[in-house]
Image 1 (cartoon, helix red, strand yellow):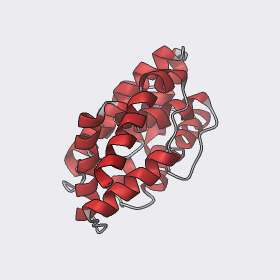
Image 2 (cartoon, rainbow, N blue to C red):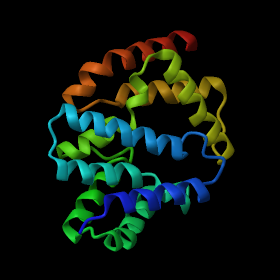
Image 3 (cartoon, one colour):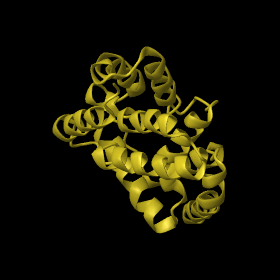
Image 4 (cartoon, rainbow, N blue to C red):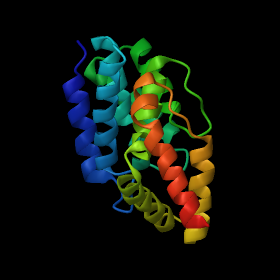
Length: 195
C-alpha cells in the first residue's frame, strides 16, 4: 500500500537535516511552499485524489537533488525517487509520472500534462505574489547563486530577471488568473528600476 505520509516525513527530515545552509532560496521552506501551492492549484483544477498524491510527492521531492549537487539537481532528485519511493509502496508507473513531473521543473523543459503544468506553476508561484513579496524571494535566489559560485552585479541580476520573466509563462487557468497579472506588474517594476 502506498504510504504518502511516510514518503513525506522521510524527505522533509532529510532536507531539514542535510541541505546546504547556502540554499537561501532552494531550502526546505521553498519545498513546503511548492507543496502547499501545488495542493491549492490541484483543487482548483479538479485533480483526482490519486493524481494529487503523485503531484504532491513530486513537489516534496522536486528539489531533493540539491542534497547531492547544485547544477542538474533534477536528475539527482529523480534518482532518489527511484531508489526511495518503492520503499513506501509506490509502483513503477507512479514513480515514472513523478519523475517526469520533477524533470519538467528544469528551465528548458515545457510541461505536457496537467500535473506537469501544475508543478511548473507551483514552482514559480512566487513570481505572481505582488512586487514586494516577489522581490524579497528573488533576493534570496540572488544571494544563493552568489554563494554557490554565480555572483552578479545588481544590474546583471535585473537583466537576468527580466529575460526570465519575459520567457516565463503560467499554464493553468488558476495561475493565469491569480498570478499572471502580478507577475507582469513585477516585470514592469524591475524594468523601471533598471532604467
